[in-house]
Image 1 (cartoon, rainbow, N blue to C red):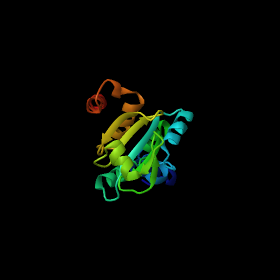
Image 2 (cartoon, rainbow, N blue to C red; image 1 turned 120 degrees about the vertical axis):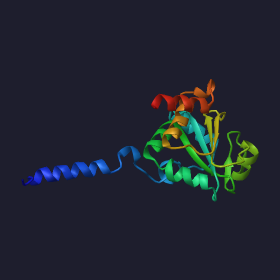
Image 3 (cartoon, helix red, strand yellow; image 1 turned 180 degrees about the horizontal axis):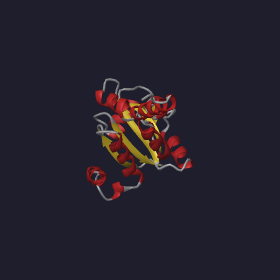
Image 4 (cartoon, one colour; image 1 turned 60 degrees about the vertical axis):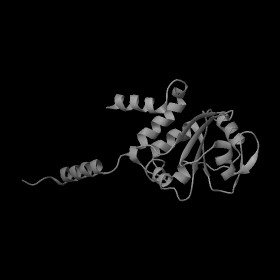
Length: 181
């Protein structure tokens, strides 16, 4: 039996569509689509966040030779869904804990990236994700990596929905994992 050409073409297209990654796993360069351009003036970033109706500012501290930072960029911060969610709710600023660039803190004091990380925020390990509200108050500090993009989205949701006010992220994450099983 000969299969008509249009049936063969439709089946081929269907099989191809099923094997290609879905839009949910679309990847994009995190330096362009996650982190936002900034003059490293965090009080200005907080004002912008407030004007844009966002929760606040997420400052991501990293170092050049950090394998965990690279892992986050290559497997989580490069995910379109992650980028879109975090950009919707936060101003996203990346700082190098070993950097010499000047940062103006929420208090208006100008210091190097290194001093801002170590002296002002006690960042000792990277990556470190510090979520600040539009007044410059620290809401949540998360150090390390998440297992996958879903868990990182849960971290964002944990901050956006203010679950940090009544439970630890580890408890929230367990609850979310159990609910999605």
